[in-house]
Image (tube, rainbow, N blue to C red; front, side, top):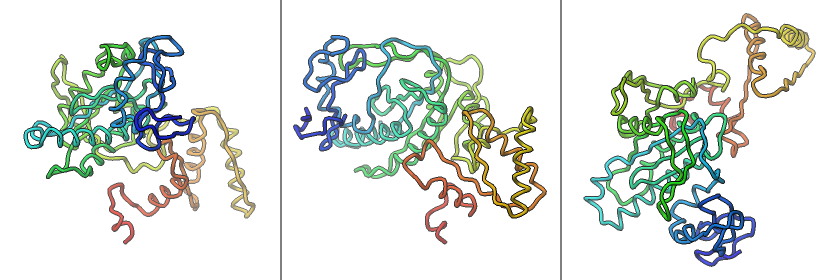
Length: 366
């Protein structure tokens, strides 16, 4: 397959050029179906692909970092987490920099945002000059979209100041995040201005929270705070008056990832309810423990559907052993570290050594 941008040879199975990063398949702006790069009309719905073809040379700025996911042909009502990311001090930059230099700065900022949002499987809905609107939960929904959005926000706050640019001082962003029911997916505008619109209170709330945030801050709504539980450390900002909202809205600043060891603990910040109907399973685990105490090695494998109570059962066993001498080693996988095969081992060692999230490498080595 030949890249339409630089004419390099690219594997037929690839979606982006291996030489320049440009998209090598034409996405229909109406139905989202994939087409050959030289196609003029969509093979799925028959509509013209001219809107896509007219933006081919600009695609390398963002397309390589944020692949386009298939989208629904009509609007949908769904739970959505909306993120507004704003570049701090862009007006001052425009006054100090040459327009071409400013374009390079904004382009680097956009690429960084697109890469991080794609890493957490979000969707960049719109670039608005120095601002970026992103959705988590559309077009593809995940179990923990609110958590993904907050992790992406913290990653952006950390990554953007590190960009190597011609500016004398590093860039900073401020981010607002809100979660709620919306109607998303309506195509608005035409040609290059066409986009997937979202209707509801949630995007307005996220935009207002973004204006409330200070440089380098991630501010979230109460709905997002409830969903993220103990995954992060927070600073309560109290009730704040926001334009367009009749009553004060509670807001929280996300400070950092929490030091909680397991996802089960993060999701259950308050005391657990009594375990009902699992007496037989708990007794089986206790019998195996007694056998292990006598020198008979035992391995127990708990298998079951998500949410059936596997972690709760092991918690009940540990509570029963609290007064007895034992060594507990726990290893957890994470959907956010799928590319790190040793993440469970690394995470367990960090918790055992008492490393904090913001420890420097030198401090950890010492």
